[in-house]
Image (cartoon, rainbow over all chains, first blue to last red; front, side, top):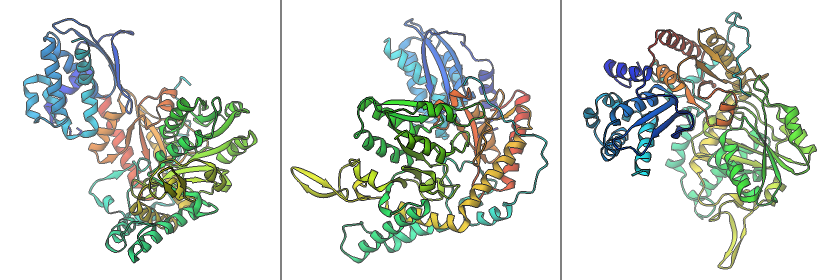
Length: 140
Length: 425
């Protein structure tokens, strides 16, 4: 345990880390995003379809990869507008600009609520969401 | 360099008695932060903790001395100026500089290299070459990349060998008639490799090039002599040797600094200003635009006093001995790799636990009170060149004890057990 979250949250994060959703080999397709300081890497394929169809390939710490998996699960099938709004709200909660409870309505993502208290790891959790938000805006 | 290098240190050595443990335990009493229950601070290569003597010097400066320097014609102004310049003289003695005028105060090593790259590159011509090594910290890479893009300079990078030592033969082959500067680190902040700077100085000088040395990880651990090293320029940070953050040093040989154009413009760096132009001040103030960090300089002076008292030579020996002990014991744990086996290693080393990302390992160690650095350590070209990616780094200092090392080993062993059970976060 890291003090990051309780036992239940920890199990949810570990489950996504061990069995990431919507992950597959992407080759050179999609956009590569990374945290250069720690080496978390995600390749994100989010083409122009509406509703959103999202595929991810990644390597990195448990928080970065579990967060990406949770995001793919949450956003898949949502309309692009709604997906972008969810990204913005989740990122605001990670930054501490919204209360942690605002993540409750996003299912497993709520397990990451404790991240906002650890400024060094916010960027691990935020990586996928920032990448998705940029992609959604690019093709909007 | 595609393959990951592993420690070849023998694993069977008996735990030899550690010579400096009693001394280190005695010094700990000077560091208020280390009295926190359960804290094992093994991130001193990122920044050291501060002794009471340094904290008191800073408080004392603000309670008794504070005024602006070099311009206030009153008692406090004189005293503050004297304190700043006394610290400069202490730095000059600490690194064996010929004169205080060769000591420029900066915010730290990063600003020192930005100053040097910016000013020196303006004296160079397109096609001139600068030789660096792949083990440099980003602070000794990016400023040169910026200068190279602006001035059309060519950067060349000396590789490492499999053990993590600088490949001197290849370095020599990079030197040529257009080489103007070789800029390398004394100690790698990732591998702990200690580079043979005086040999590199001979190579650079016989090629007609200057030598700049990144001493950020070396100055806390050894008695620096710029003349013995053969350094034409040398940079280090205060905060890695017990002083506050935001104060650092660029040393340059006097005639070289005199020939360089100034870095930033403003107060203190000028001698005459008219609406038509300016003339620069004498050394070292020519490079110190604006009100300097006097509090930082005072803290740095107190830190150097403390290091002299503790004996900086002993500090380096103890840190290396303790690091070697911890590395040897960590390498015995299933799944743990200690990376690199350079001929001479300072008091730090990188390690990984198979199948566990360094952030997750560092977070687990933190939950056991053990603070280590995780990531690419601002040395991305080296980290990726070694195939290492992200790693944890343990670093030791004068207040680190055998117990600290044992607590690290115990926490990593626990992480290894938990990871084997498939549950680490």
